[in-house]
Image (cartoon, rainbow, N blue to C red; front, side, top):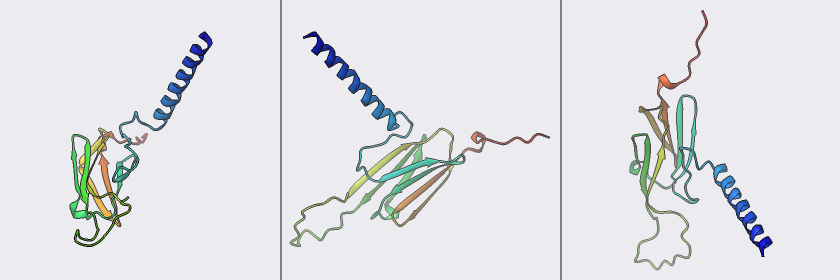
Length: 146
């Protein structure tokens, strides 16, 4: 009886350790929180010494319908992708509908050193690119010895 109890506790601790390794390995503890698989739009996020770069993949969304805002270091991207099926009066039977349609909203926490007055956004072929410059006073500077 006791050996079964101790084996169970070892298994439990091993499982907890595996879960911790899994979640820490996925960078859950960072400022940029991943979301559930299949969230729309998919986002790639990275940084350079002088900027933060955001790529949002929004195929089928009109660029004019996108709303991008930065407030208190939160970048909010929202919009709507319209369902493109024939009208209700047609005799269409839908067997599968895997493409997301409807309103969406993604919120990204930005680092403290971004300059919200220096933001640019471009949209090309379904990819929205947002570039946010970092404040100059926070960037590393090389000092020359005289």
